[in-house]
Length: 289
Ligand SMILES: [Zn+2]
Image (tube, rainbow, N blue to C red; front, side):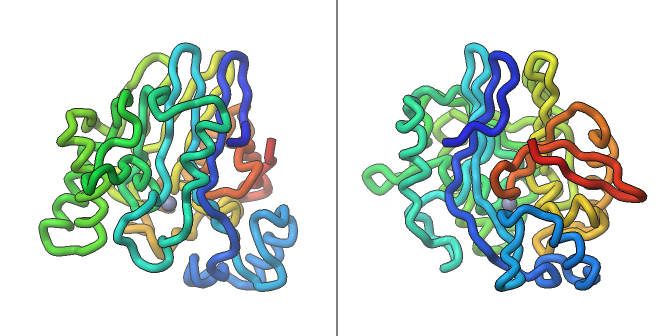
């Protein structure tokens, strides 16, 4: 685990499951102007883009928020031993080991928040124990968006294979164990932590706001996938359910935090991940912490 934000008694650490170059800009963002994208990418740190192959970096990570008296895990990557497409089958023990390396055990996690129910955000919710899926974090309360759950449950009932698998091995076992809370996407957890609807990528996705003392932090999940979308907020990924809505959500989010002290923590950005959004001409730029 690597600390990416510290604010008074609060800290945010990242646990990376895997990262590396994946798709080319126009493969992730169909229709993007390749020349304009290349110009923007030249200004990015190496960890966002692999110039040799022309591929964008993609990081799978989770965030551990250490708040006074509470340890919160935001999203849980792909997980292990799950029947997934080949792309997601890779060795992942390091993800669990990262807790021990920090002096944390799975028992120490009080809260697990899943910002949406995509394959790369819910995987470590559960582990295989004697042939059964059980919650990885036995003392945690898990928070899922109610509308998000209903959307994917509907897909699963219509016979969509991957959503059915994800619910069966990573979500439903948590609900059946009595550890889940299905909440509205504007749920207010307490005075320090609240959710805000961020529809488009998925219908029930939410971002997580954290007020850490005087410091505001927004965990932007997949409302912003890659730094390229800071410069080109109008482009949604091929994975977004409603690309126009996703673009509106992204623009609203960037507009709200631009030129403020608020720290943005987008889930698939490479290290150092966290940064501040600034206005640049008609668009936006990003200043890593
Ligand atoms: Zn994702």
